[in-house]
Length: 131
Image (cartoon, rainbow, N blue to C red; front, side, top):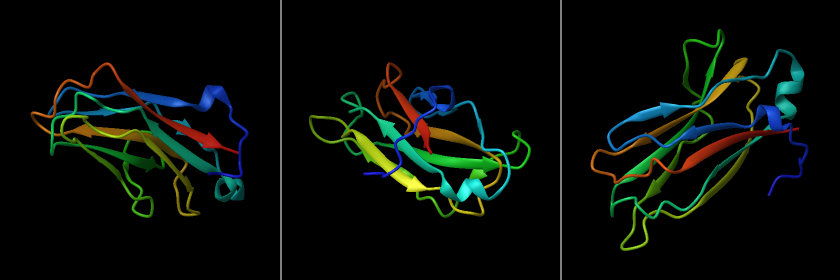
């Protein structure tokens, strides 16, 4: 659990899980510039996904960008993979990590659901900066 607990509600970004076989993205968060970026942690959350089909996956990845347009996965933050079980679907996720010093100014959350992964579109994943 993070030691940082200051949350600015205006910076919490949610992404509604896409249909099976698709990808969706949250809005981006502007981290600004400067050394304060190294002091920020991220909390990624996803509730249980009961409709996730057995052995199908949902992948959540933090992405960054210099310009807020062209995003790529942050290599030093591991993607979080949720796998559907039988019969319960996927477990909830609570993942926290520090933002690496190499992270670019803008960040967003990418959610990808396997083809034939079930209808999880009523659920959202959230990305929260912790100061």
